[in-house]
Length: 563
Image (cartoon, rainbow, N blue to C red; front, side, top):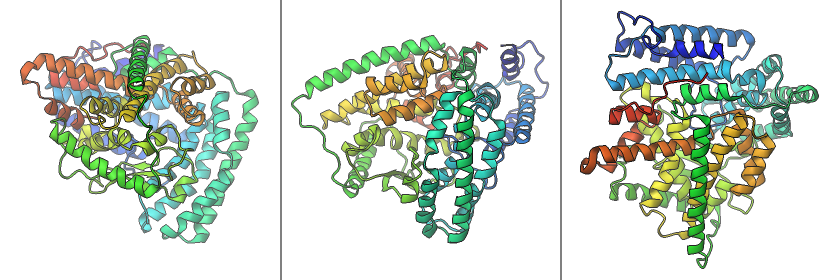
């Protein structure tokens, strides 16, 4: 507790802790700190299974040795010291918002290295640092030129050293995490073999070099799996981080003004609302013929393209949001075999700051009754996923943020704003009438609402030790309801990464409160399009900070860490 308190005081603006403010703080000082930090972050940020927080990274070998982690901790201490010397108290609010953003970013690194050190307690972390980089490289559509081909090969060749480092770093990994990692690596050699076979023709790599690198990676992954099997009998069962660590994340990374208990109550209230609305809709639609799956992948892709264009027109016609002419399209594309065999769920490419002239791509498999929860719904009507992930959701929001005139706001800080925007967009578009032509699609939206509300409860209870991983999976499976495999994947992600699952619901609730306060403050001068344009453009900025800048009130900013 004392360690967390010291860290919190370090990250507060000077003067709040009773210290003397620096004599020569300037806005340029923060700009230089931010530029240095984000260049450093691009080199050393861990890969994650999420897609919203992907970075444009320099190529090369990644290092998770104890010495490398120690060096990152020293670097972080230097960034903390530079941050501490800046006095932002007299700055205009937009610049103070930027200052708090860098504080959030520094707190996230503390979270990763010290508070929730997955690098020493979760073997799944090393699957993310080895296989996820390969998947991310392959979601950018091929064929791959010499530079991209060499980077793919480098990531494959990096697998053995990272796994060796992981074996040395892991200490008392919880048994549920170990079990999940063992299961995730089942059949990994055959999966990598199939990946290499189908991938080689779209690269400049020779069959010999790609096969040799893939075989070495498979050897290392199988050794890692065997090591985990040896560790399992002596592994502790407890997975929960505990309240102090969880509150550290909520207050200092996500910048939420809520306690875990308040967040839990908010989720439970939204669950009731979603169930009630879904019940009304089902009763209303009981004589309406059910939705049908797309008949084949080509018709699915064409249907999605046509509906994406209509959604853009709908946004403009109804005065909801400004769609810039330069924004490219959210598209579906058949899943390449080299991605399919790896078995990852986030097979998409939102593009990146340097690729804004390219379409966003979501890779999909042939429509069938075997599709998981989200993709079965999408094969019935692609619009809910387009709205959440494409336009006006993540792809739209990320592109606007990447073009922000303020470089500090071009970066990911926490999913509360990003996922909040995506989830808010679903019901906002429903209320504006986008789904009036499809009664059963409205049911899908309400069922999505049930899931996001349940995620809050699962996130909080996993973090506080009130749910086991298996209990969380079964809870999701029964109460959404959803297929067992998707439920388990969700529970695994929530257990190993506390604080992410609640971002959809809590972010959405923050946005609706923000809108209501803006409407009451501005009265007849309130303009919905202008409000949404601000929120989307600043969609990387936690909502409490957006409120401060837009409304001039800091009442929703967290003031205590609870550490």
